Length: 563
Image 1 (cartoon, one colour):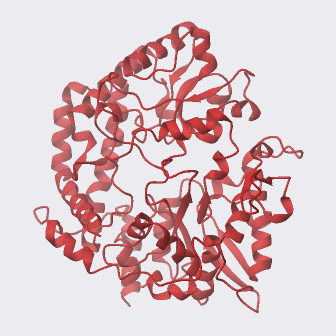
Image 2: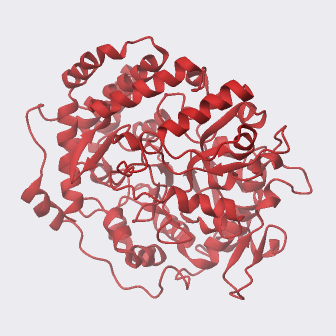
Image 3: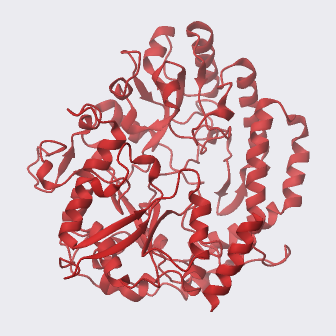
């Protein structure tokens, strides 16, 4: 009955277009300090011993079912399938179905509808057996604990016997175990885990610049903001580059470029205290800097109409010498874009470290890691509490944390040896190297997205980032290391969790705040709003409840630090 009432309320809320919640009054504070420590201490109860370490020996027995069964999997992956409409046409999924005797029916929301479609799942009596989501954008509005308490998803803590491989990864790294659980000690789902090339590599993307352009203007890779300005000026005036600097359609990226100003695009921490970037004087200083770039033509004049959310660029722009610098993935450095159809055969992309105000200025302290010290990727696979096959569903997902399965998911199945993968030269039978060029120069002329769907999987539960690093050229490998040069100590861990009441209140306040800030960022940069009125902008944020949002985030961070 509780779930039915909540579902009915959500239908009404969705129809009204106000997915925010109501919570405490603005003057009430969340748990912090000693209360936070006490709350956290009551949660996590420890993990059981299992018969493997990091899934080296698969603990599952196959097939998972004597009779062929079908599991329904909701996954927001429609944009990454290429010309293949059903992932089941891919080799890995066919292989895994034969092994497990489990067929998967993929339910894929249309591109651009993922957030709303995810919320509608809770207003339905037909929750898929497994829901794969990106936790930073698709979360139950009342929070993870409430999703379990309200009867939607299974608490994995109650089913460790079904997921020994997953448990082996949670036990292997203190940060992983700490981040996977909520403050109440619940395990919301199977969290995506990224295994990187080394402990000090925490990102797969960063600032990049065209080396061939730099050579034409006789300049070095910029390291300070003044040097960046000089290079952007040369790209614009000497080479006629349309967009010397390309950024998100929101005008502000994930923080890689602004961090040298001592601020961040959203919430961040300094000495354990939560701050909100747009309230900072340093944020205003950054906007003034970028506004000047826009006026001079260094910042993409049409950034607000582009498709990029902050990483990579529109193909037409990137492939036709219209971009001088941007944030991109390490796998796309060097001459990768030539293989993807760039019109200029000299196209060569190199990594840049985060800029500083001067050589002796403080180091940048903020960026969004793709894999922090906890190695969690931000994706999560939750299991429907109403699923007829919930135990099989958990075992099915758990298999991805076992070496014999995750090797095939990340590199291609065994039979594709020497076609899409090869063994490393060290003789280790489990050390596979991805033949990355196959993705862009395969004999059938398939596009890269189609190749990925046909031979591999995109963002499996256990992702081997080393697959994109170990076989890369020296320039690409240097990118991963260079982008991880400055520890992201100001970044607030993704896995801090709000209580049910806090989550409702935060959603009710911050949804509108975030929209307002994103709209104003664009208007400030375009000159549609004057930066002379920035104090008025900050006052509006206060009136909208940003100080209360900071309090709620602080309470969650305190509890996380006390785990």
